[in-house]
Image 1 (cartoon, rainbow, N blue to C red):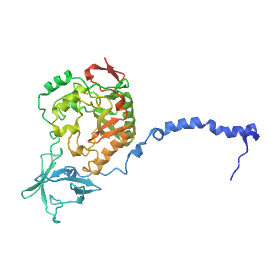
Image 2: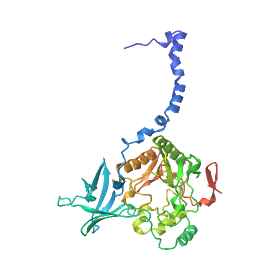
Image 3: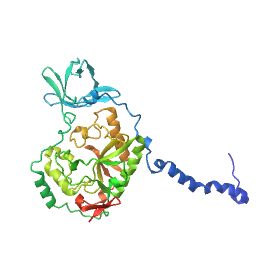
Image 4: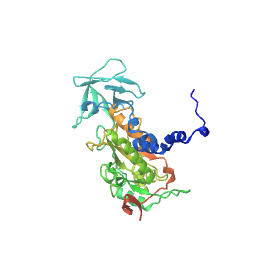
Length: 372
């Protein structure tokens, strides 16, 4: 074991040699922060990836993966791709391989023998059913008709629901909350793109609800979102925002318009939404090189099991992208909603009040919005 000379017995030159490395320590730490910020602030871009990126699969396979039910709708099945193979998962979670031959698909059956089923497709080539004689497994997810699958018809005209919602008041809340500081997301980073569905007819009501296509979040949540974006950019991805801060009256419109079976996908206005607090965001990934949205196992606002963040279907690459988005968001303090892979809540949501400020009543300057 090496022994050190006591400092008291050292001469000036020796003491200088001893203290010199420690004098450099602040500079070394500063350099580390600049060189590897991910080490200090959280996960690096590389650590977000759960294993190698899977290869894409043929278009024909992507047009078939989905959820199917037998003719009596007593049993549902998930057709998925995993490790370059097509699998048939029953309603108990058991996977069995299936095969394609001469334009037929051979799903498993209780008897053990495989029977070739013809594949019915729509005009776009998307599989809609597998049939043998008069027996069919019919597709039940949005892959069959994504533009209309998740749209519902309100029981009353939207303008009637809007008038009632604007006349109503948010629920009273006791307690002390932080002062709201809504920030316009597009002012923070040009790699944040918008596709605000509720300002278009391409939403689950089939008609625009928002008056403007804009996205706001409370400043801490917005800054965390930007940090997640910066971890994704080296991997070739940007963030595409579908929704963020939502005035309370819009939450009431959604609730009143949605039938009972769909209410797990919308917030109860009597409780308020985390969107109303400016601490929730609906988003997906897009490819930086092309600007195109990334394919996920399910579509936005689909209202089916494909919306669940742990849905086992789709392709390996689709699930890899969905899980990459989740890891990036969770690394910066967000939590995914259990029914929607695209919805993330910021950790401090409970510290902000329910807001009911319409977009047109927010003014923007240097990316900062506040009530007029």
